[in-house]
Length: 357
Image 1 (cartoon, one colour):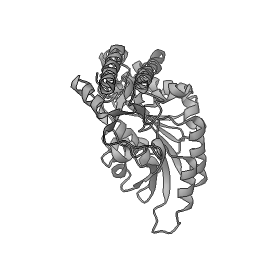
Image 2: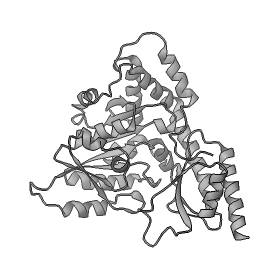
Image 3: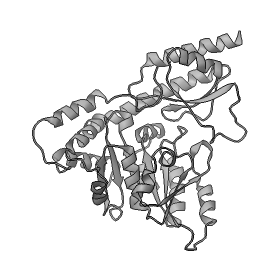
Image 4: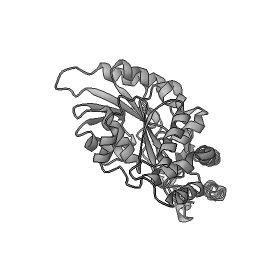
């Protein structure tokens, strides 16, 4: 019953098989191989346009390098104040932008709203003492498990572009958000105004593979140099590409995401039906954020369940976690077993019954 993260699972068999196939024999190094070219073509097909792709091994590298294309050292990159790039990248975006500043905005459920972004931008001065905003980055799905609709993305993009900012999407859970919306990759990105995407795959079945996808060729001019200078151009680049080849083949990536989302929905529905349990935010992708009685939390952990406590900083006004409660995060993955979900809910139900006796 490990719901700590979708990072705790290994790679899917399909991805590993593709990796083994690519391992045989010699091929050109540093991403000059036919597997990398094929993955680039496949991504262009999925996004329905020509684009620039740079493969890296980590989401931190993808986000930091992408933001370095958008934000000069004297600029500001806006995000939600609980965004992964601000709280969990150990300063990598600031490092790779050579000093650009991350500024966090408020928003219920870790979502940035277009009206709030507009108000913030209108409140800035243009004096040289004020760092100018150059980019906004949003997480899809976000840090509270919520998904930006295509209309919300387009509204944010409209504000960004009117004020001279570019829009980056941290798509660590891109596939989970995509199947939740029933959208297409194009609709959820460049057609809604996204300029650069960090296309995540590691959380959804890959071993270690992410892609920086740039929709504006002008923005991509220095990407290869930045990737090499940062130490993220792998000599055996085909082994990065092979993971994505297996991941994207036959809609395997979408099947993985659908399974993860389905397991999260079952968890959410089961927990929500128990007395004393409520959800901090709706379950829209593969993360569930229940507020549990501490007695239930203790029972689950005693039975071997693994998960993390979570911040309530982005709760809706009027909502709070009481002293006898705890807000936690449960994350499902492509490899989550239905039996683990059933067992988790059974233990939670028993704890709720005991507390009510």
